[in-house]
Image 1 (spheres, one colour):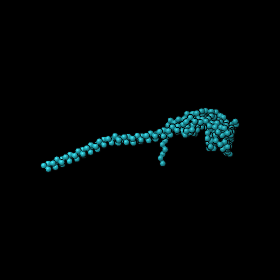
Image 2 (image 1 turned 90 degrees about the horizontal axis):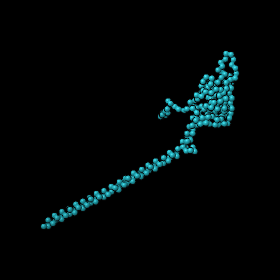
Image 3 (image 1 turned 180 degrees about the vertical axis):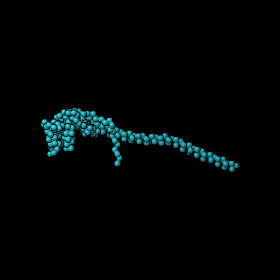
Image 4 (image 1 turned 120 degrees about the vertical axis):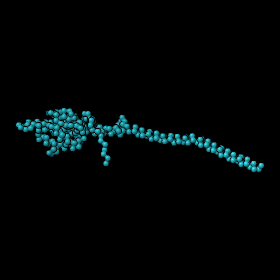
Length: 234
């Protein structure tokens, strides 16, 4: 009888332990389920903070780009660089100190048997004057109202000269902006271009001015075959 009671007590104790363990396991499972939404919220909050940081960084970048855009008063860096490029490419009319050089054909009558071409102005005569001015530091040059740029040509076209594919007859007026004293000295130097041309009676007059106006280049500027090359890495 005692053995029977002890068996019942043992079974009851085991049942109590099993019940306790089941209850504990159930509670743990419920706690885990309840914690999943919380963990999800934490994950979403972290992602939201990261997205907000990225948004703020993009806003700062946009503001920086907007501040760099040209403004109507021309104070932005982009506007300044654009003006500088236009100036250097000859697309802007300029004014400043310099010289005005007038060249005309010779009035001397050629003698019998002499080459008459020695007494008239040719493209190489004009180029000699222009090259001398450039070597003396001329910053802008025009010939009979045609602005000289990197692609300008000066060539004979019958009895006239062509500059930027525009023909003109003598006299030729060359306007150059730069240090006027240096430009004048370069043309008047002994044995220089002025002295050489005057041997044949070519008329060459140099006037110094503190306000020489040089027009902008008005021709077409386009490249059909040339394209920007990649810089070679050293």
